[in-house]
Image 1 (cartoon, rainbow over the protein chains, first blue to last red):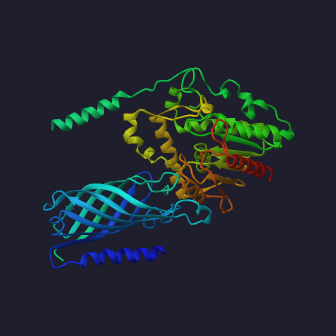
Image 2: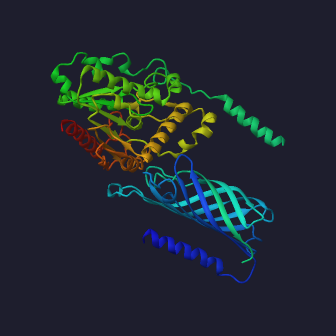
Image 3: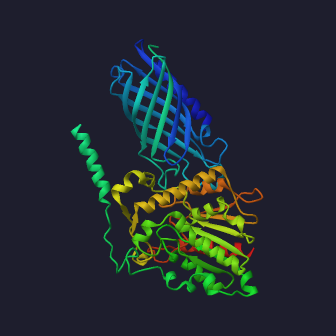
Length: 181
Length: 312
């Protein structure tokens, strides 16, 4: 299964989950995500953030994010080309407020392309397991901004996890908010 | 609010503690009794010392300036030197990095630029004496020190350019990713401790002060960024990377980063060879326990290749 197929399946599943429910109050946020890994790359992409009344009265958000160094540090440089496909479930402590504190878990898939068969002996992919926490603010305009920090529990170890999966990362998300879809 | 103040004061107290290790002077390189032998017997380690006035034939003989890794000593390249003494077709000049091979305080105070100075000094001396075929080999941290010399344009000032570079298990990314947290936890921990085999005692520092770990992190981060921008070798130089495919110290991902980031002066890729090894600095076997036939085969293959490269 190549990268394009994985991306299409990932986006299809994300959107399907959102609409496989009866008519209830749902919020959807879509937008840009920018990630800076400490001591490594800037990796950018897109994200979805979904919540509804059934998820503890909108205290739990389900998120899907695609990030890539191809949209960041690897543009015009020799940085490695690597991609993240991330699913997360985050708990919002002040879900009714404009300023919210969040914390949660992420999982997914990390893939790196070494672009040379000499490196076929190296691990190219890994499951992701990360914790993330931070702040989110809903502006009066339908824009939401969030600033979070996270830690990849599974990070490169020189043996069986790609070495460019680093532990500490910071994210900035700017999303368009669609309430009560 | 009281809880916040308590936590803050506790953190400051921990940072202010600046823990110091317990050093056994009789057995540890970190102490004041054991030093790298190159400090007292430089003529046994440095070509610039033991061939003070080279003949024409000696000036044409290849010299490999060998730079060891972080917390190590000249011991790391003893086996290549022994091979050179046996084959008599090339010389090995073992430099001792600044701050290394001395004591804990020296190691703690040294910057990565200090580490690098010894390599530059030997290169200057050899070119001044007229040696024409100079190669540089770096193991582990020795490798990014060489790469930084290339990227900074250090060799531009010399008429005699290096003929080539050998990078053995180079580190651009550490396998132990807690190194990226050294800025946060370093001041609290003070130092880390490494476990040495019996045969390695007195050849590596046991304790790694957080100041030196920060220097290491700064060096490899700088190297990574320079590789992303692209680094061109000096005119006429070649470069080969020898990397273990499993390495618990220098993450093997360092190899593709170096391969992508380095180009020869005429735009070609550098050479790369991945080895079926799980040793860090697989060319150094002396002092290890459990050395296998495969390990010996890998060392022989790498040394033979380096010997062939300097003959070309």
